[in-house]
Length: 474
Image (cartoon, rainbow, N blue to C red):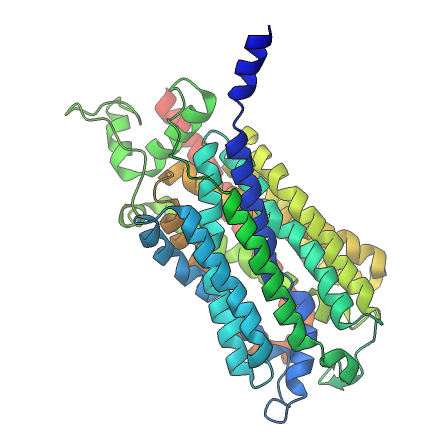
């Protein structure tokens, strides 16, 4: 009995769980990108205090967020090449410290100009995240390949948890006395109190140092693992993954129609591969459908996360409450990721994606009603939105691995993340060109419309996949 118990304990994947914890901590620090909605009023107000930047407004500083996302998407394919030469663990360290460096350098650049701030807080900061984000997930997936959704959710839950922590840290560091914006320009509110604005540069230095320390600990926890052997062919999870490869990848589809599936031997006697390189992924229709869904959903998320505080300031005169709303909703963001990951593993990634888009679209379309519902409605809707879009960022990586395989995950997901470039450019242009005409409500409605369009695409993808499964199982 004792020997049996010891044997069972010895087989627990302790090292794998520690690696997942390390990935969680990495994503905890990467969450400082997602506090931009809370940070934006402080940064914009600080920049306006300089003579050269006195005309800067929210329609200009949104390009900081745009640069972050574009740089992040551009760095992911580079990471894919780097991972072919060094272990993803070291890619995590390089990327995460680049991320922290961009944050810390903003201590100097924010004192001078918007352009330099975009360079450090946007380009450098985003590039680091683009390298660390998928590499940390890949390390965890190597340990638990049968639980793609759950493991991805547990790791990226750090983003939601970190957003909760850093939102509160930023607000209480910069604005401990809950001061209200004093200056109004074209309907937008800005801070002008020196006691508040003087702390803005030091906040970047604080965040950069704290992030770098946590990231070092996280990388020490991440172990070097070889990809685990594939699951038995008769397991439910492998069957679902096999069918995804068969129906979505052109090489295997032809073989399946001849009576041969993924993992089976082709007519030449060679076993079919399950990992697809980026140039092969670009040959599939499913990739472009996923890319379009990504664009539409993230456009809606872009407007909510960047402007929830700017919009809410027009009817709620309580800076600490608005920060608290962002922090509380980030808890749902954290908890939602492993929840939706487990749902995706059980229900199916396409089916889960439809549910997420339906809930998110409905919440985004009614978000502007918070002007009439006040604080209670605002915090409920924020929790609903953040708790739902967390599922999108968990399901899409899992679906990507399920269809295209694990080996080239970082590069293939980087191709998908190139949608962020389109979203950020479109979001920045729409904000700067239309805000004065349609207001914040109109901007938010555009985002909600994008999510609803993605719902239509997701339903179509799910129906097509089910029909194909039924056809090939007959």
